[in-house]
Length: 228
Length: 222
Image 1 (tube, each protein chain N blue to C red):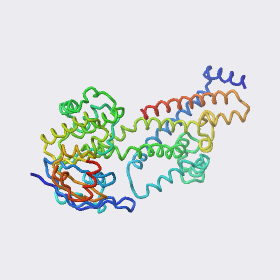
Image 2 (cartoon, rainbow over the protein chains, first blue to last red; image 1 turned 120 degrees about the vertical axis):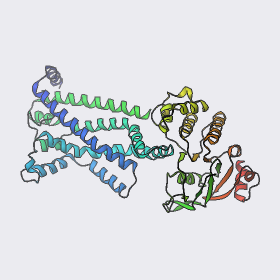
Image 3 (spheres, rainbow over the protein chains, first blue to last red; image 1 turned 90 degrees about the vertical axis):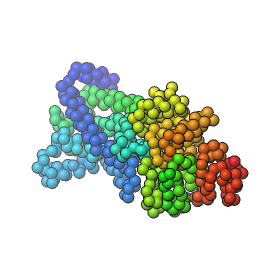
Image 4 (tube, chains in turn cyan, yellow; image 1 turned 180 degrees about the vertical axis):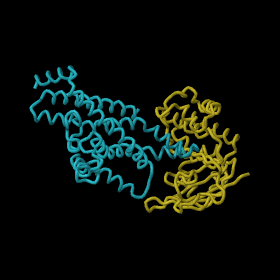
């Protein structure tokens, strides 16, 4: 174990090309999917948190259900849709980073919506009533509401990124964990461990854990700003 | 003198009627003090007039023309996450007016302080200054002095009088202080168990209440 960690650190410091490729694919997949999820999920979370409409509770129940979607089920769905017999086969997206991003987006959006909705629903009524009382219009009220949740948006993005970077089930099914193409840290760890190449697996594990630690520190800092 | 007539309306929450308000005339340059026990319907009445919530019928709370502009300070005003001075200038970008109000309410040394970090009394003074930034035809204040000490209450009352003298609005002030009602009120609106139980000139109505409910209320609070 100790030797494996020593070798892994040496591998990281050596700037191994395969390791760098895996990190770059992971970064592309995680950053893209978390940012796209944020772009789609934040307005939905804002709307559901601030507005009261028929079916809102049912929507929240559905969203919570989607939050619990097993990644492999999501992967299976995308596999069926984009495989050689699926309706979207002509797009030829299976085993590409693009479809990995799409699958991740579907998995992460409910998380983003829920995270934003719970925060917004706590403050929206008070913000709206105060702004209305000051004679402010809807546009300015919406801007104020968004300004009030800027730290929450940062915290939500970090959580989305952490979820994306640690996911393995869906990305391995639709990406295929192809070396130099769609292999990300989590799939590579599985792959190299199965092959008995513990050094690369441990190196990736160390990087993944370090990133997870960093993200958690950042989330804590941002959440402290929210509570201050 | 401009006068706005409110409609008769009701408000029900979860099957329980919390307010059954009769029609009322609100005239400019008058301060209406709304008094009554907790849960008597004062805040619901204020929120409906302000447009924050709808009546059961979903119609306007006013019969005919409504005031062109309505200012409203809720019971728990929200301090926006920015400096105290920026909070004031959100309502109207008028630095001179902001300066005047900060001075009147002793907020000048807090201009750069984060609004959400102010103490209860400071936050209430900021919220009042914020709503006084603009001239309104009808100004509704829901217990603005609830978390204030005597000094802040005095400053608030002074600021309100100056606002009335300058812009001549109709002011609806909800208060739990009978002394404050006597000091500021032109008209008394007494709420009891969801009804507007008694109205009349101030302080005469407080000196010689006509209903048993107001008599009992004044015995306890007066």
